[in-house]
Image (cartoon, rainbow over the protein chains, first blue to last red):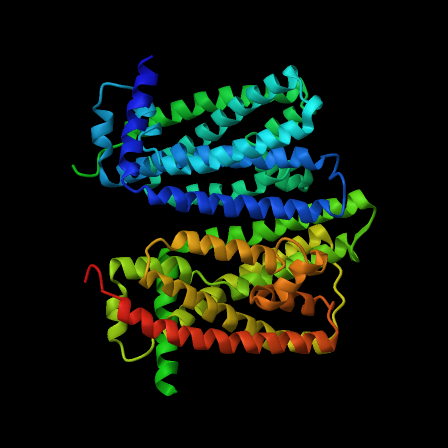
Length: 261
Length: 267
């Protein structure tokens, strides 16, 4: 309950802050529409030459694109800005103020900044996903929908834990913004099923930079192609990473000596 | 002329020094430049597997050659000036540049060339290793190989002037990111980065012919892998020269107008 109240307060502050720049909404929307339009146009070109792609039907790939935008919107709205703020806090010593607050510091740093206008990506992604689902129609049943939701939750936890660990490195190396950038550029690859990629790249996208769990696995669930082993594996990895990142964060905080003193 | 040469050498030293400070930024650009063509190479290889060998005259090996060469051409011609100008204008760091007795575009060109001299060996090494993985087949023709050098140089100049001019939009608005996005999305599609332009439907190919993007990325790539006739190559060079003229002209006009609009915020 306390968690939800805190979340609500931070979001309200974030929204109030950005409401002063209302025209940004339209510029964000324009950028999202352009990006989505290019992605879909690329798909149209590819599927003008073939009706299925390594077993994936057009609408299943469109659903994957929807999931990609949904997840990247969520990352850009909350995770990325908060983690950038965390690195900044370590660098400038302003993390002091967070650590002295009477709530869990990991929670506070994880939701401390909300760039609300990136919600355009989430909305467009959800829209594309819905259209794709309607077109897939009868093929998606309750079982698949449940597996999809579960896979998406696991993917979200994995991505969050991964970002937290990257940002926590700031306690040792201070300047780690660039590593966050590397994740963002690798995430591009998640727009297509990772099964397309050669084995070495698939391995990288699954374990080194866990893009596969955020996009491909949920899409597989929708296409009814997700084995329960994969789903269980995703949850095991999510649980493992959540614990590891928590421990890593604690060790990092203990090292924090505040820049100003 | 000698004055300019001194400036280029000096800028070379400055860029080298700052590269040693900011290696990571270059690595990030490199990853983006490798990943984007790699993704579409993989996608189109998958398409050839689904259709049984070839797509519109491209086999998997042709796609490999196309996208690996495209990766190098894109890397040789890219600029990051559109991201930088907004910062220069907003922070007022442009002001001291204006006091110098040479046009600021010279230091930008020198900066760009230097950082490419640093990254190009890495890029070529990556291209070779991708070559071992994807087994490209090139059909090199001697005249095309010879023509590639001036063509890629023209491509670089066209792209530099066009993007430098667009970057000047920062004089009028600080919201350049939407404009940049529009430019990059158009480029992705009409330059041949998503698919070789031969594979696009006809009306889109006609649009691509008129826009500058194809002539800066797709055209040098097609030339090097040996998919163009001499007549097509000549047409391409003609279009490059036309865009170079347009780019130069626009650059001068917009630069003059921009300087009048510039209020040196922060200075």
